[in-house]
Image (cartoon, rainbow, N blue to C red; front, side, top):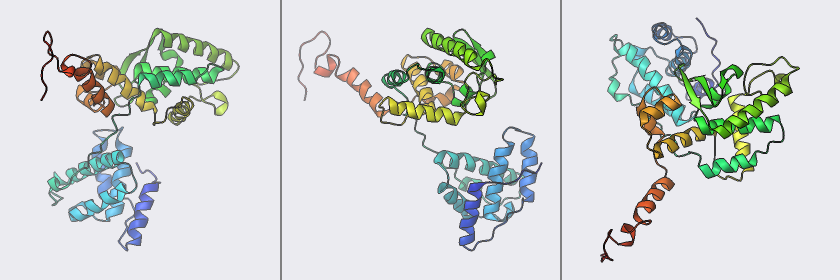
Length: 331
């Protein structure tokens, strides 16, 4: 299936190469189609993203796979690093590596793959929201109307469940139960059950009643959280949630950046501090393997300092006193 190419980043890269006087191929490459036909048999959901990145790569290098040199790949990576975030660069280069391996296994790529290094993005895993910040945000959200109530529900559910913002936006009225819901995990499409506190359940119930009264005369979507556009017939978008969280952070007087994903980090941090096993945390947040939890449970500098002071300053050891003994000399 042919998909029209409309990639802003690709245009930027092509313009860069054109200024350098290098050859550009803008037509869909035969090798791309051959690779995608194979890839589609393995993963239909990833097909579109793979097409975008492989076409981007082929249009940039302007060569068939068997003629590729290491410098072509290196230059492509440098170019996308100037356009994309480190995480997107890592994602894109993993796709390109898979594309190159496809041809290597068929003996059509002479380039040794061990020379192709995929950069690892250093994610900011320390942006977990604290309990104090969460309480500040709740205090900043006064329940004056249905959308203030909606926003408080969103903040509470993000905090209590650790769900992804896309999973929250996909919630429908029929998904909701008393203090719990079954949601579709965004990255695996598997379903999982999430839970929230009694206080959050009270606010959610209050919002759902207000939502019904507010929308009774309109033909609405079944989305739990309604947006402001389309005469309230559409669910809220991830971008709208991001803007709402940013504005609430400002109203709460919080200076550092808080985003919807900060609640997910905070949720996992709280569970880890309570000693909950990684396998249980993975089930609660919809990770396919407990190994990925390590990315979220890395301690921030403040948490490390807090742990140190709790061990070495808030007890007799920190004051140079052994339990049951008098003061000892410290060199």
